[in-house]
Structures are given as structure tokens and as C-alpha cells.
Length: 238
Image (cartoon, rainbow, N blue to C red; front, side, top):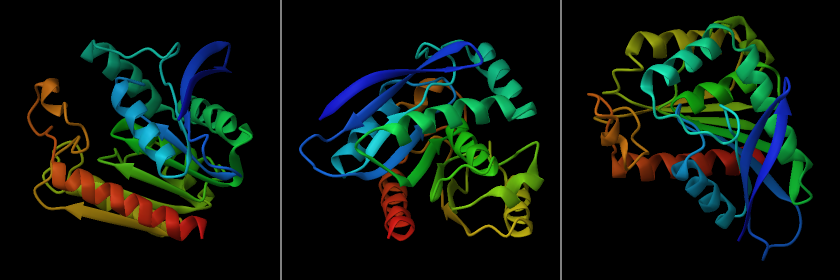
């Protein structure tokens, strides 16, 4: 397993992503861009990147905040994320630059790219898809579904899969309904998987550390959602 940090610049700011690739495999393979939860590119998403590399993908975990920073101040985190949500131009540009790093890797089949994301990371890969990026599929795990630019769904080129807990207070039914309308109006090939009893951050074993109600790890949903992602990759990549 080869892992390394790779820098990329957006608007004069330096970001630091994390690459994972299995060097025992030969030939080009699909590339997967990973977008972490709102705090940033911490150990959890880097572990997911290594897991994807073991499964035969080139994985690149992107950085939101610059320098690979992981935020610990909740108010600062929400301020930054709020700015990205109000105007998605910035987060789309950061994600597009990270996708370019992944596509340029010699191990990557640039015709077979995907994006996956967790919480705000799910929002990020959805915004990347709305920008018209050449990704075959994007997958959101307990992802925020709202956008300031719903009409941009018509730019989505690949498949969309979002996986949500029905007990997630951060993504209520009305947000899911608005997202479904957006996808339908945009003519998108999309799926929504709803997991009964699952709350927000169901893929994060340390979710309780947030100390907030409605945020809880769920091992069964974590495993089911990972398998659903792999199934979506198999379909999208042929």
C-alpha cells in the first residue's frame, strides 16, 4: 500500500490531500475522490481511502480547509461550511482541483471516476456533480442534500446515490423531498437509500464525541452502506 500527501492550489491557497493506492496491482483502475466530514481530512477518511485502495481503486481524500487542517472549533467549522453552502462556487473549485489530482495519477483510469462524501462531504461531491464534472457516480453518506443552486442538477452527468438515516435530524424528510424533486426535475439517474433507525454520522465510530443529539454510529448501517456504494461502483464502471 502506497500512501502520500499531495498538495494542490486553489485561488492561491494550498490544500493537502491524501492518496492511497495498492502498488501490488498493475494497470489503470477507477479513481475515487473522498470528501470528509465537515471538520476536515482526519484519520477516518484516510482509513476509508486505504480501504478503497485495498478494494482495487485509486483513492484521494481531499482537503477543505487548507494544509490538511482538521477543525476542532465547532463555531469556526460551521462558519466555513455555511460560506460554502451559501455560495457553492468555492467548494466546487476545491473539489474540482482535487479531482484533477486524482485523474492525473498514472494509476488512474481518468474515464472512470467517482466521488464519495460523508456529511458535508456528501454535499461536496453532490456540488461537484452539479458543476458538470466528469464523474460516473457520486455517493453521499448521511450527506446534506440542500443546495443554493438546484437548477444545476441538469449538469449532472453520472449516477447519484445518497444514503440517509430516517432518524437523522440534520437531514429531515422535507430536505429529502426537495432533493428528490431537484433530481427528478434535472433528469438525474438517482437513488436514495433510507436506513431505518439510523441517525447522522452513522459511518463514524467516534460520532458520540460530537456530544450532540441525533449523531450516532451504527455498525450495521455502516456496513450496508459501504456494500451499496460498491454495488453502485460496479454498475457505473461496468
